[in-house]
Image (cartoon, rainbow, N blue to C red):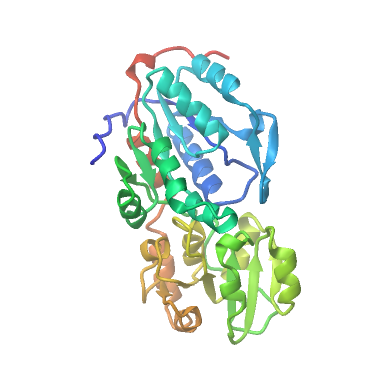
Length: 354
């Protein structure tokens, strides 16, 4: 089923509540996307109020201790939303805060939108043996009452539609080319060519598929996570850089020759755009995410043989990668979110309570 057409609300400043269980200082594609959209929307005059875990008592998420989950947040979320009287509510995640906000919207008969960022059913199967059908049944229930559900790529949209989801809208991602751009080489004191991975060091990222490759030159891992200690012991020949941010992160990208993205479960992969913006071609598997982000043979190589993809990517033109990345702005990403919000006209003009 096609989603209803979004309301024409381009020129009118909006009071938007963004509810998310993933927020700063977490480092991942979800927090990057949401925080950049918040900044872009506020720059154009909208007011974006973020309801996030830092406002609540929290506990660490199992297997993801850096992710904090709000404890019994429903009462506080309801009070906050009642007081704010938002023009639009966007629920970004399916965690405790997302559930509380969804219930408020349903009980108050307020329209809302959601977004799909993470393939939790696959992770539940991977970590706990829960059948994917169970996980997707829960997600269909969660997103089923939304006016629209924003998804990162057309292939993810098709995959979800095949599982019974409807009212789906594609919502692309962006990259800050003011930060991520080519830099002079060399940066690393390592034998070239340099193959780099940037991201969470965790089982679901399939990073072992990269580390176990027989490649010339050197391998670099930028990031951290629950598997780092074990993998660092198993692969002492790899350069482990840990978390990097901003300009420092961009220099770690630009100092490499190929960006390797071994994940088979990511829904998009903002890191691939960041790598392209720094002049790095991508080597990845031909799966959702890379299939939508990478221009095969121009900005990267997709192959079930990841080693072959890495070696072939060395031959690509870095300039093509940079030109492709420049087509993806966070401003456009924010506009797509705004254009698809479900506006509650009964709240227009109501003064915000302190």
